[in-house]
Amino acid sequence: MKAICRIFFFIYCSAVSAEISFAQSNPLFVQLGLAKGALYKPDSGPAPHVAVLIAHRSGNFMSHIATTELAGRGFMVLGLNTRFENNEPNVIFEDVALDIRAGVEFLRKQSGIKKIILFGHSGGGSTMTFYQAVAEKGPVASQGREKIVQGDSQKLNGFPPADGVILADAHPGTSVNFLRALDAMLINEDNYLKLNPMLDPFSPASGFNADGPFAYTPEFKQKYHEAQSERMNRLIDKAMDLSRKITAGEHTYRDDDIFLVFRGSGGGLKSRDLSIHDVTLKPCRLLKNDGTIVTQIIKSVREPDNQRTSGVNSDGISFNSTRVFTVRSFLSTIAIRSTNSIDGINWASANNSVPNNVQSISVPLLVTAMGAYSFIRDNEIHYEMAASADKEFIIIEGATHNIEPYRPRNGNPDIYSNVTRNYFDYVARWINKRY
Image (cartoon, rainbow, N blue to C red):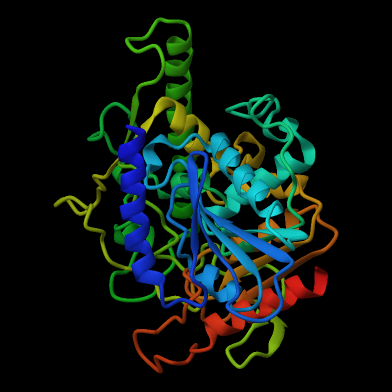
């Protein structure tokens, strides 16, 4: 079996290498226990003394845009894939930190490296902040009265801390994203046909307008977001009851079991209503396309998605997607308590929670948000809740979630053409100023 895995890994790496061989640096592929990575070095110039570790929870980040962009600016970069690569249904979130530890320890051993920066893009934000929180505070950062899942004191002990953290359009956590994507109409977790039509997000009574920009009514938003929280809390109670039975030997299976969530995606309001979390509460710094920085209230420039998703049934009101997890992976990675899916979240109830984790981090922190996506207010919250004395927050005008230029449907398609260069130039200056 091990031989087969090695052969598969060789073939996989060869395919990836062919795709990125033209990049700024030729990567060296490394196996790190159950994780694997691609190590990039600058092609020229001084030997780097700062290394950047880039990783997600389950995504393939070995050829992430930041690997070549940062290597081309003089840094060593490790794009790391965790043991849960392309295996989202089985992610045990606390175990991801074990692979980040392997990456940090590997970089510490590289010649000339004095400092290590964790780069958390999208879902990598909760991954990196959880690791750093545990590295600084110990296993206690993963434990507590409010936690749904308690971190293992032996597994999560003795992590070497990084020297800084960068968040790149990090969402609050998979837990929160999932919560906000639930179809709030479902009122019975065992019967996917039992719906509350009063919570139909496509009904004109809710404020929905398929023909142009709109805002849901305040009453509808409150009821819908509260109903999403009620659904999540029901799911948590169901999963915890199953977990207790499994532990007590009272369930059919003695280690784990499948856990289905009916109508588990596509139900969010944020993608359609640009008044929800798409604007900062306070004046913030905006890196404009011409390279200048201004301070102002900032709103996303993205355009709304007014379309009924492909998961909508013929009745026009229901989503039919089913998400598949195990009992353990749901509780570890997805579950989070709340009373309102937007502004009533108990951040401390989950380890997969950036706002909770940044409260345990003291190293310098750079929080960046993309100005053409939907996590602007979320990243403002990350910045506000962060404990680091040295912290910055900046939004990149016209940047998509992938750190690339946004192209409006109508108008000049090149209006944000400098996004990628501006972003990584800023990140490089931030690192060089401190390390």
